[in-house]
Image (cartoon, rainbow, N blue to C red; front, side, top):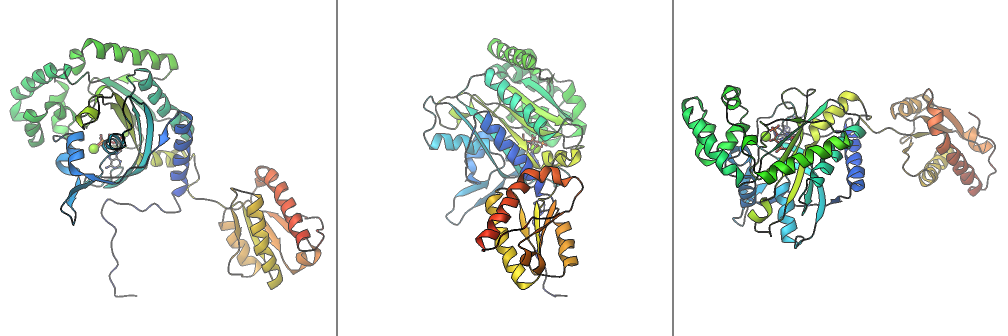
Amino acid sequence: MSSIQTIQPVKGMNDVLPTEIGRWQFLEATARELLHAYGFDEMRVPVVEQTDLFKRAIGEYTDVVEKEMYSFEDKGGERLTLRPEATAGMVRAAISNGMLRGARHKLWCIGPMFRHEKPQKGRFRQFHQIDVEAIGFEGPDVDAELIALTAAFWRRLGISRVSLQLNSLGTVESRREYRARLTEYFRAHHESLDADSQRRLEGNPLRILDSKNPAMQSLIAGAPLLTDYLDEASRAHFEGLRALLDAMGIPYTVNPRLVRGLDYYSRTVFEWVTDALGAQDAVCSGGRYDGLIAQLGGEPTPAIGFAMGVERVVTLIEQVGSAPAAAQADVYLVAQGEAALRAALSLAESLRQHLPGRRIEFNLGGGNFKAQFRRADRSGAALALVLGEDELARGAVQLKPLREGAGSALEAPLATAASAVGHWFSQQGMSPSSTPR
Ligand code: ATP
Ligand code: MG
């Protein structure tokens, strides 16, 4: 045993191991494919931004800005922050790169986000989001399309224990009157407010509605409803969205208590929740942010987006078992004897060339047949190709199915492989005999 102390991982920041990467890759590949199909383009933005960007975009009186940001001064004295979410950076990038000017963009990104929260099941300090933004669209058609995209995503992933909640926050202007009523209400119950809520009462009372403190919930339940103060245009927008969702057959529940945690939302807000993950029940949250771009110095541009919590969705995939946990080999090459080994290594090259996308594993490091077959089994391969001195002399390769029923899924690729094997033998100046099973 070494006396050197090992270095611990950072609290709340996880490694994703090869034994679980299959589910991540399934999620990412499905997202990439679906976002492409819906006309969204991937964009990549930095993980670090000016601290001010998040303060201005997310709002000072939010959990994220008040207590969760990883902020620091770099060696040049700049105030920087590890991004806690992606919308602010995506919008900043659209402005910095002169992408607005009346143009419309459907964009997405995926990557790690950082929030200094109390780590627990489904809540981490480094976590990942798929972030989707439609910039320059008034809606409600785009709102409906975005929601349809998320519904299609659950279907593709085989996830059914999710449901959609919907609300409208109205415009920033229409919220003024509501805000005044809300302030009155909470002031009248000042003694029941927790410290966070007392601070928010004067700064931004709407944030109190978003409180997770169980002790605050009955007070919040009695608060006036934002929906009763909606302006006419926002009401029409919301009705338009509901009609489109109905027409597409996408079920939802209107939740008048749904207020998203970030300041920049207006009109449509939505959240997909699940009853399969315990307390951390939000898997995808989004909404319209018509005022944000102007607020960040861009020309006024309507926009809507959502963010999906990748870790939580991966857990749902694990529960339904819709993707293999780890990658599996398709073909495993077993070889014995020096000449056969040399031949098998080059045969593996030829197979990889002829069977693109298939995982062809060559038994590295030798070993007797028994040991090699044990590895072949562990690789998950459906099929072993065996090449010993005998086979080599005969110009043949033995095919050994390793799994029940594996043959049918591999039939077409096998035909290709067989011709690759034949081709390879003739390249070696041998005429291949049949390849008995
Ligand atoms: P929550 O209510 O769970 O704190 P939030 O409102 O802070 O979520 P958003 O900022 O809307 O979350 O982020 C979008 C999604 O990202 C959430 O619905 C959730 O799935 C995921 N998410 C947010 N914070 C975390 C975290 N600390 N760890 C893992 N996933 C997270
Ligand atoms: Mg949160």
